[in-house]
Picture 1 (cartoon, helix red, strand yellow):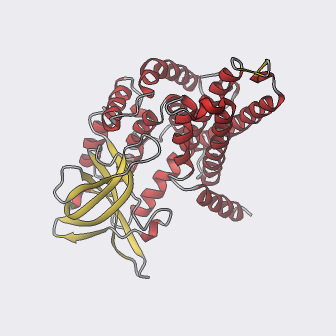
Picture 2 (spheres, helix red, strand yellow):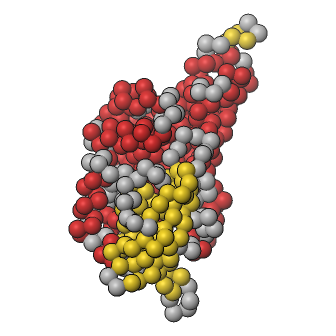
Picture 3 (spheres, rainbow, N blue to C red):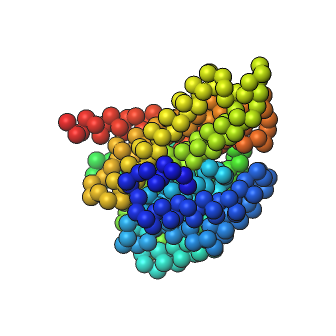
Amino acid sequence: MDKFIEQLPFFTPEHRTLAADMESFVGLEIEPRAIEERDVDTRLREYVEVLAKAGALPYAVATPGARLDVRALCLIREALAYSSALADVAFVMQGLGTYAISQAAPEHVRDFWLSRAVAGKAVAAFALTEPDAGSDVAAIKTTATRDGDAYVIDGRKRFISNAGVADFYTVFARSGADANGRALLSAFVVSAKMPGFSVVERTAMIAAHPIGEIEFKGCRVPAQDMVGGAGDGFLLAMRTLDTFRASVGAAACGMARRALHEAMRYATARRQFGRLLSEHQLIQEKLADMITELDAARLLVYRAAHLQDTGTARVTREASEAKLYATEAACRIIDNAVQIHGGAGLVRGSVVERLYRDVRALRIYEGTSEIQKLIIASQLLKEQ
């Protein structure tokens, strides 16, 4: 990727080879497609197929019984996001949508969906968020009621990435209550072809992103398609988000690194007041801030990834720090890149304009910046 990766002690030789291979792959296969923002569904499926052919999807789709290589996951997300946020979504959703399945689904269910996901033959989705339940997962209203050898699912899910594109969804629903009356969440694999399942709305976002609202009306799911046991859903959802959280920061770093490169290219070519922009001290100040924040963000991301791969304890605080700082810093870096470009940075379709739209969601999904701060403080106080 660049000298930064070579300078860090966090990686094995295999990781460095992977980073170099991904840089070449992205330049050849992703960058030529990145500018096109029409027909998002078709392009996402194309990305999934291309990533499968390149052998990248096994780094997102966990192997049962084996630990996911989070450093590799982060390296690939950073490389993809440098060029295309949609390619990054195509890659990571195969992992988010299958992680719980890899950990706890019955063997025949697990093997069927994981093999199809890793081969790029089936697109995955992770269905947790609802109209009234975002950060507050306990507020989920979708229900799963036992009826003989099946569960009947009723409810709606909102802001579901890959809605309308995915072939299967890992769905979280209330399946009962514990002795204290608290809701028990369970997870299920739901095929997009099941009766009672429908996509009710495709949501237009500021960036090219396949997302929407799905509905379940008397959707009968075989009991054997439950992932884990009854009531395991909350733990599986949190485990999934914990595993992938640092990689959101990696994607932010990829976008920020591209913005810095675009800003430097423009500043060393554009003249104002008889001098290159890069010769003006205020532009130099911006570039200095951008590279410093980028380096700090990448250090936090790859520290968290290294600890996840090599440690035995959960790294909740470190992953949240990485996600929080990298996404917030990336927004500042990209905003500075647009400012350096001036009016040219506002032109629809320019690289920095696209990055400006793409990066904004990262401070919200998989736990907002505000939620990350609460997690960090909570973990810090527990350590006293």
